[in-house]
Amino acid sequence: MTNLPASAAGRFTFPGTSISVNRMGYGAMQLAGPHVFGEPKDPDEARAVLREALTLGIDHIDTSDFYGPHVTNRLIREALHPYPANLTLVTKIGAWRNDEGDWILEHGADFLRRSVEDNLERLGLERMAIVNLRIEGPQQDVAGPMRTIRKMQEEGLLEHIGISTVDMAQLRAARDIAPIVCVQNHYNLVHRDDDAMIDALAADGIAYVPYFPLGGFAPLQTEELNRVAGEMEQSPQSVALAWLLQRSPNILLIPGTSRRAHLHANVAAAQLTLSEAQRARLDAIAGLS
Image 1 (cartoon, rainbow, N blue to C red):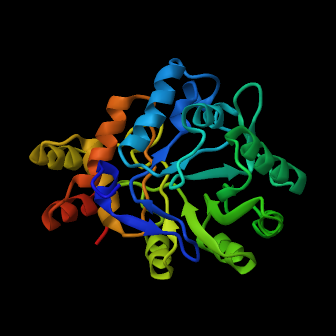
Image 2: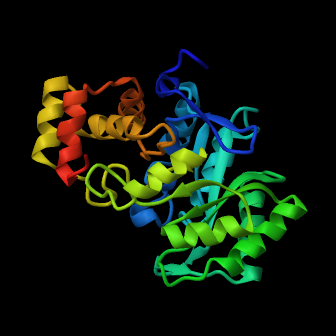
């Protein structure tokens, strides 16, 4: 695995665990249909993407049973089960989709337990390696759902706990109840509200996993990024991913795609190195010093 493209960015071991992964991973969200709802246009290509990800050295796949819903987990099982021993599957709970495709937040104890059980069943697992609790907003309570997840951890349904879409106060509240091994928040080259959080987590050895690393449903575009990419003869997307990898050693990437060609382009970012001058120019896009 050490000479495969995804390994070029190095490895990370989640704190207090034996789980070590390449920092370049894969997010399964885009394997579902448009707007992360329904079946993919090309299911065979979706399964091929998953198999190709492993071939490239990816050993960390992020998913959720509310992608589709249920679509990405089914595809992962169809394509990859029985899973390689080194593959880490991470899921999220705390929301569901209605028939119109709306995202509905829910943190009741019964719902969270059913969510974990649904993920286990559809992925074909007896225990999840890591479960992220999706919070979504500073007004949301953390303590109640965290106690529910801690109980499921004690029962053996999951090994470790992460948390998603939280601020520092919510993160502290979560850590008061159970050890947190990763935080998954919105962050990229131009959306940097979490700079202080990333540095604090790095000091504690906790992973930070940015979602929408390339801007999400509206891809990020800046003239300076385009100029740096042109100088490096690389795509702006690859350069933006490389910037994230060099931003902090605790950042793990999970860029998603439903096409093998795009997957290769994403993974290639693990082998790029920005000069100090190039990093400074990209940092300045949002005034980071």
